[in-house]
Image 1: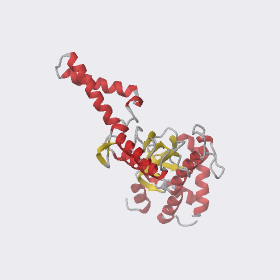
Image 2: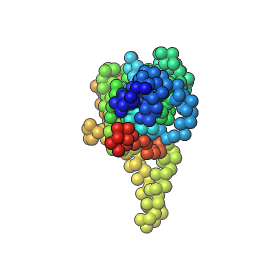
Image 3: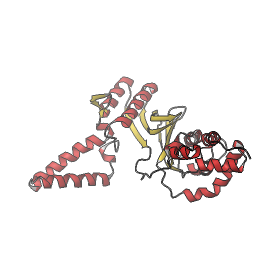
Image 4: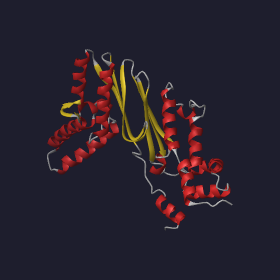
Length: 312
C-alpha cells in the first residue's frame, strides 16, 4: 500500500478540484495512483451529484465572449459553493466552454441541452464537474446582445482567468459609423456600468421595472408625509424626488464616470457627431457574481489541510 502523503493529496486536489477528504479516500482506494484516483472520483461522484442540488451556490464565475465580427456578445454565470472552486482550471475551462457554445447559438433557451465543440452536452459538463469536484453547481443565468450595425463591447472586472471574472458587462451600440470607435465607446460605457457607485437599473426611465418604481414611490411618499407637509405639497415633493431618482438609476442620464460633467446620453450624442452617423445604445447587461443569492458558510479548507498534515 502506497503512503498517502499530504503532498499527494494536495496534488490530486489541485488537479481534480475535489475535497481533501474525497482526495484522500480516492488515493487510498487506488494505491496512490493520481490518474486512477481522478477516474475514481468522477465515477463515485456521479451518483451523488443530484443530492447536492439543494445546496446554496453563490460563488463561481461570470464568463463573457464577443463574436469575431463584434456584433454579438454573451454573458453566462456559472455558480459553485466556494470561491476555491472558481480558481480551479477545470471549472474555469467549463465556464469559457459554455460561453463559447452560447455565442454559436441562435438564442440561449436551449443552452443547457446544447453541445460544446467537443460534442459534450452542457448539462452533462456541469453534472460531471459536480461529480468530480464535489460541490453543487448550476448555470444560473445567461444573456446575449446583438446588433445589425455597430458593436457589442465586453468588460470583465475582477478577472479570475482568461475570459472569466466576478463581474461582467455587455453594452451594445447600434450605428453605421466607425466600428472601432463604437467598440471603444461601448467598452468605456461598460466600464462605467461596472464601476459607477449606483449601478443602472435600466437603459431609460421607460424600461424601469414598474414594481421597483412603485416601491421607490412608496418610500418617498412615506418620507414626505412624515415631514408634516400638506398632502398637495407632499405629492409634488414625491414627483420631484422620483424624477431625480430615475436620473440616478437609468444609464443614459447618469454622469459618465470618466467625465462626470457629461452624461452617457451626451457621450452618445458626441460619438454620433464624431462618427458621422446616428448612434443608439441598444442595451446593456450587468452580471455581478452571486447577486441576489443567499450565501452560506463554505468548508474551512485551511482546517482540512491542517488536520491532514497533523498541524491542527
